Length: 99
Image (cartoon, rainbow, N blue to C red; front, side):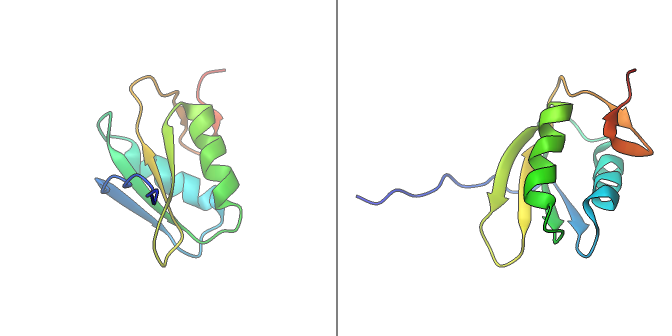
């Protein structure tokens, strides 16, 4: 019996962070999802070697659901926007907006 990975949902939004450091990538990601609806699936293309650590950590901090890496040739990670997500600062998306 073979086990297959569950399919990663198709993206509603794709954020291309090719060549960006995670700090800049998170700025772009935050801007792209600002008006997106709850449940939106976001695929993030991230070439920064820190992305496999930073993206799950950012999802944990904000409350969005980290879905994991997307199989394929490019380094892509998936997340789903949560209803109860905590807002981050527009200029510093690694910090919560609330004090």
